[in-house]
Amino acid sequence: MLGAFKNIFDGSKKEHSSEDRELRLEVATCVILLEAATADSNFSPQEQEKIIQILKSRFQMNDGEVKELIDKSTVEKENSTDLWYFTNLVNENLDNEEKYKLMESVWEVIYSDGTLDKFENYIAHKLLNMLNLDHSRFIELKMQVKSETETA
Image (cartoon, rainbow, N blue to C red):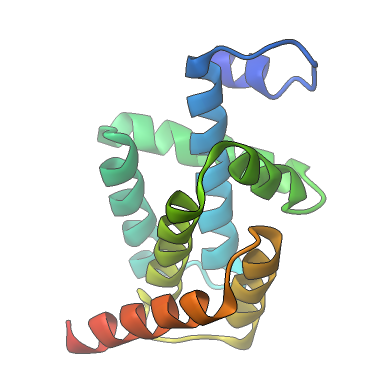
């Protein structure tokens, strides 16, 4: 699988198969979730567990596949200068409803440790703009996830 990652992110302009497209979206999704989780410089066990849970559910992965995806996404995140490449992949390949589902997952990661740090809030708003989302729906998702987290 790591060989497949390397081929997908090698910077070439060749056409990607639907399998490559899915793998690139998996990495982009994971990078976005990791960025939200680490925005406050504290990657809590709750945030780690929430990311694992989201990835398993969203991509029907087992523990080993999720670990490999997180490891590769961490490297991709560290080697990138910003989120544009990853949000651009999302914008090119997902419809609005899928992007709102991703944003809901971002809020779930952020609120999984029970707090909203100013840096996490900043990243969420940055994603709002980069994913071309509607602000009112963005706030609805935030309040929904916050409410669910507080009652859990």
